[in-house]
Amino acid sequence: MTPLDQLEQKITDRSVVVGVVGLGYVGLPLASAIHAGGARVLGFDVDPSKITAFADGRNYLKHLGDDMFTELAQSDRFDVTTDFARLAEADAIIVCVPTPLREDRTPDLSYVTQTAGAIGKALRAGQLVVLESTTYPGTTRREFLGAIVESSRASGQELQPGEDFLVAFSPEREDPGRKSHATATIPKLVGGLDDRATNVACDLYRIGVREVIPVSSAEVAEAAKILENVYRAVNIALVNEMKVILSDMDIDVFEVVRAAATKPFGFEPFYPGPGLGGHCIPIDPYYLAHRAKEIGREARFIELAGEINHAMPAYVVEKTIGALKERQVEPASARVLVLGLAYKPDIDDVRESPSFELIELLREHGVHADYSDPYIKATWKMRRYNLGLTSVELTPESVAGYDAVIISTNHTAFDYEMLAQHAKLVVDTRDAMRIYEKQMGGRLIRA
Ligand SMILES: NC(=O)c1ccc[n+]([C@@H]2O[C@H](COP(=O)([O-])OP(=O)(O)OC[C@H]3O[C@@H](n4cnc5c(N)ncnc54)[C@H](O)[C@@H]3O)[C@@H](O)[C@H]2O)c1
Image (cartoon, rainbow, N blue to C red; front, side, top):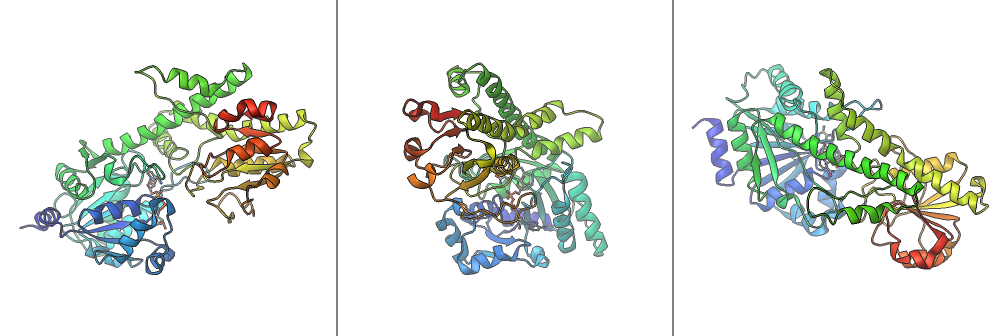
């Protein structure tokens, strides 16, 4: 039996040890799904607080629920470490590290290549390595495998991909906070650098995921993920542009989208908002745009969608300032409360959230801006923003003390009826106040 035959055998009999690198929004639920399927899981992270969280029983990703966290923390088939030499213990390694953008909107693959370097150092015959981080087509074969091989050679090894170890790409499709789907029920695409890598990686994922779909190459899997996100970015930009145009015509864009969505085929509804948030849609399309530029092609839809979506916070602020002035409130003396700091409802994820931009732009106009978010008690110093704010408790008195309230994120926990009764002005970017429209009259505007 070769080492790769042994790997296949271990996957079949569930004695496989699966290393998951990066225990964040993607890696942690994946580790949990594979653990639930019966395999032994070894989690790796560079952030020691993630490791101590398990020892202390402190769930750091609330939306996943405390049960999932406790089950992992207490299991003798689950362990976590910052010691990357232990990668050698894993038969299969799945990489879920961040793929952000640099300041100039070019891909920052440093987390991926650093991890590949650590894997190369510990590499042994009979391992499968899968990259999950969203990236442009070609990364797994070039940058990822390249860094693994370079580091493994530097450690004196001569292991051959396809013969001694296998490499594949499988895009993550996580949607934190979504109740209808979880890691185990979202179909998983898998594309290897060769057929054996595809087949073995498919078998590995079947441990924890109900439906696994092989594609012909890692590049197809990489491109499919980018297409999914570009599709969303472009469609959201389209409805955001429609919102701006229809608003000037006094037509309600939300009603228009819902009306169009009654067509039983050929239309999928997307809704406008205050701008894009999250780790995927505002970022991933630029990975493809970057690669397109390298091969001498333009990604015009991506660039245009980015431009339109990025202009949304300024549009919302402009509308708010206009409405305040109509009410004889000058920006310099105005107090505005932004509802929701997370980028989408009912989670505590603030990455790329347009609410930060809203607050900064309001401040640029001289407005005193606060926020309220039950999931985020205070802001902290981030790469781009350092607001220095704490969440305002929503009460009839606090709400009445602001000249305007902007609904940026429609958390279910907000008391919208109370807002309808006590707010002087509500600027609704999420269509959260429709049922109070009549009651509020001129105190409600959409933006
Ligand atoms: N969050 C989502 O909804 C989502 C959905 C689909 C795809 N993705 C993609 O999945 C990837 C991971 O995203 P995420 O949301 O899980 O990020 P995250 O920031 O939640 O988690 C990343 C984790 O990796 C750790 N980490 C950073 N550098 C590391 C290194 N060198 N070695 C080991 N660990 C390291 C961090 O400490 C963190 O715990 C990204 O490429 C992202 O685009 C995310």
